Amino acid sequence: MSRPTLGFLLGALGVLVFGGSLPMTRLAVADLNPWFVTAGRPGLAALVAALVLLSLRRRFPDRRSCYRLFVAGLCLVWGWPGLANIAMRSLPAMHGGVVAGLLPLATSVAAALILHERPPLSFWLYAIAGAVLVTGFALREGGGHFEPADTLLLSAVVICAIGYVVAGDLSTRMPGWEVISWMLVLMAPISLPATFLLWPSPSNGISLSSWAGFAYITLASQYLGFFAWNAGLALGGVVRVSQVQLLQTFVTLIFAWLINGEPLNPIAFAVAAGVLLLIVGARQAKTQDRATQ
Picture 1 (cartoon, rainbow, N blue to C red):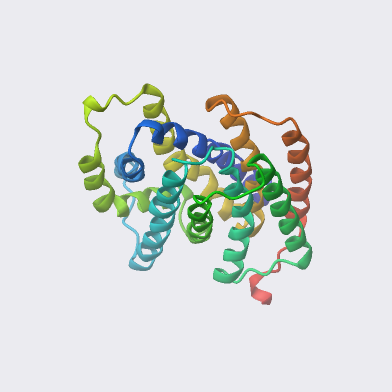
Picture 2 (cartoon, one colour):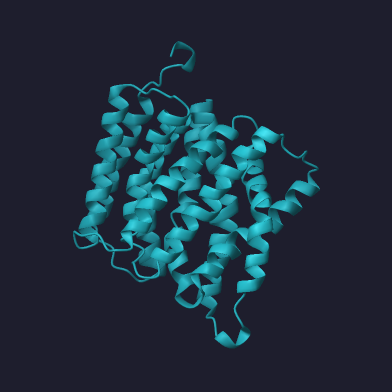
């Protein structure tokens, strides 16, 4: 299997995990304080990451890598989850699919600006068409309008895109699982104290479903999903692999239907087929070699 193909498949696996993030976040914040969820998911995930790094005796990154890990951590450990947690307090998970529709294009733009990648015009046409299709569908499902909390989600898109690009670039120098592990460990001095300070009282009567949602976004969304996603970005290229995230909207729709009981429109599958064709087209668009730029 070629490196680009393997990267594409790993990216798809990451998207499958991330697709459950918004529905599970909605479950978590139903009873749990959004600020506790924001701090708790990276705090507890950092404990797991530290155990993994210690057991495998990984060497501490150099100063330059630590700086990039810190930037990526601010974006992916605090920025994206924090804004999404607050927004999902008032928005249905399906409406949050707008974010997944815009994120691939935002990631490609961030990669072009930060990493100086220059995909051909055909790639941008496929990417824009995919983003428009997904966003139009998500808006249709959301009643054709944006809620006030969408401002938080749109800000989260920009922050998450920057984090993906920085983490993807780091994954070309170290394994993807190690990138997310060090990100969480570097954020631990902030996340762990905040987790214990905000830990809910047993008398609050937190439901089992909220704890289940919290466990998912802590172990899967915040940690394990990045194992596949970062490796996929490194193997297949940030610009091209990021386009598979267009399907995250439809994964989120299915999760929202199964977990949150939100209605699922059958037209979603027809739109998903169209998006898949656009992803294949974008994937086949050749990215120019940096050496020729």
